[in-house]
Image (cartoon, rainbow, N blue to C red; front, side):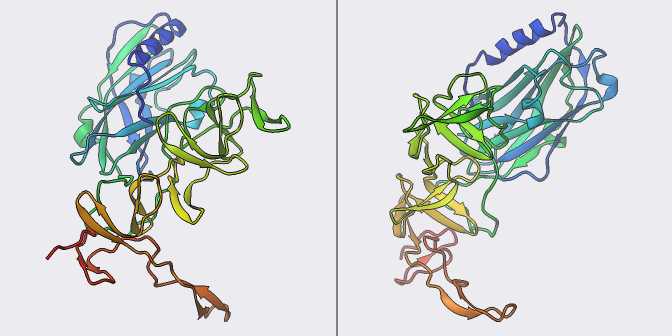
Length: 383
């Protein structure tokens, strides 16, 4: 879900910070270090912020605002962008304001946190959180501007040339209009995305990558399950995260099962126990794929493992010839047939499908079983 909560959200947060720190005043220059997690999964950019000691505010930084510029490496400028604060920040009761706003026109994500105490200390690295981006192409990101406040001061931060000296490239998440040229070998996606923020009780507008446990307990009414929050009220029309699993509670507070469509039109699948599914699932003989990092059902092109698949508008995996954007593609309609092989390590005979094409996988740079040539992108070469 793209963050577009309220355009005046940060202004409200700044006001809240001013109440918590009533002596905020003029901005001055200071230099922070913004570092990027080099082990990010596809579609993610982990951010750590560290102020130099000499630039710290004597009484401690009680408010931090950082704006990040996003630059897609392609023509598609429609990005789904969200931000998940680090779990240490989410669990810190002294950090009372946590907000993020994405300007889709300027492609700028602004992150803000503030509290009654110190939220950032000079010389100490602080994991800020993770930027989540859904894009068919790589996206360059860098810190554009930053500000800190506290102890009667406000300071602009001199970031220097972050665009050229300290940018990070977020890897694409798939979902392109057509397969990339010569699909490359790489592992399937995993880990997080999502966004939309959370409340202090751990309730969410949609599943996120780094979630804190939702405080509360399950209650059985005799017909349905409900979840009573730590506040005493029931979770309604919201996602909750319990013991490593995601659940959705409807407007009446009842636990959802089966297919569930969110207000943004995205579909999720919840098992009989209510737990959200991810990855490949087969229902009534039809294959669907639910994003590994947030459970949303995929449609259109999907890169999973080493292969491209095409999911129709209903989310169903297609096979055979498919016409996509005026081009024909061939998706393997044959399911692998296990054959008996001898495992030299165990000396036992086992079933194996090794060497057989994956069901639904796109043909590329070869001849299809019915004699047509397809190029490296999988499109049929017309005579």
